Length: 427
Picture 1 (spheres, one colour):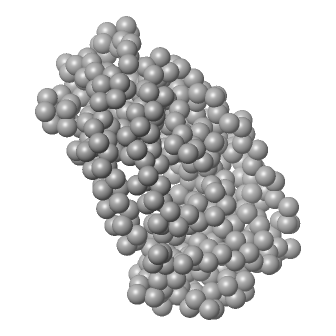
Picture 2 (cartoon, rainbow, N blue to C red):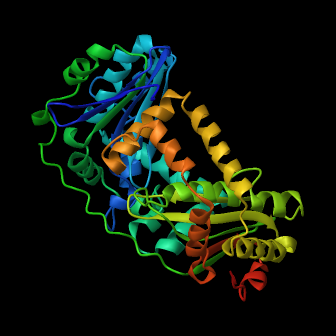
């Protein structure tokens, strides 16, 4: 039986309200979500979603950027915005006593930001600095490099943050037009988890959100997303570094793929936990690198499965060979039933711990609504994880682990190319 019950209200202005009332909590997490991310940007628009995220914190008609910062600090809350490849969200974590004030602030920022030219120009400099910081961070740079290698010219291959040339040319009126086109009441999902006045919530939200006529009409354009076609490619970037950074992988199951739950457990076994095969055999047993892991990312119509590590140039070839050997074993059915059961216990424990977070619950409701059109009950997720069999894992391994379908990206010092230029995965 579910511990909490989700509620869903379609508001008169077209916005959707999701709520999870938790009477034992003393806090509440409030999120405003839109199905809009960097993959929805057309050619020449890369970075606009992220730029808008910055501008929503730079002041409204009622609040300056300092007022926003001072007000949230005075309430002891946390406020942030996150731009992803498929969604953008703004959230506040706050003591329940301040929920109404926090909701008013987020509504003001979302619907009534000023986009003043002076603040626009200041934020341009901030974003350009942010791009420079990414270029100086090998792990961030590797993430962008691999995305561009795997997805090519598809928008999923572009950096969320944008590129310097496009950001440098952007005009404030172009950003405002993009904002007005996409930030509409009917595409907004309001997600709330924690302790609040449950019976009063829908009415309060209705009273604070603008009516549909006040915010850009009732027929927002649908995001015309094209299913990505992955590329098989390699990329090598030289940097004056002590370590070599390497990522390889391929397309994986989407959010809506029946194999998503199998992939979750497969990822835990392969490389996303301390007891995983890659971490234990390559890092712990042989000491060939400090960092190695696998990752699984799902989108609405595709996904990524990747393996990444950093190591010295001296050990680079040895780590590649060790990864190849381990994936070869996994592909031919070497995963044991005990590993599957341990992965299920790991997932269940992490899942229960996550449920202690109102922010996690708030985000989960919104993402599920966007991806599935419903909030998947907790126990349904656990049942699907528990139902994964060893045959499911082996079938997915055979399907996923095809070395000739893997793309790779590498960042390292001069000499790295000697280790990578003739390398081929054989699994």
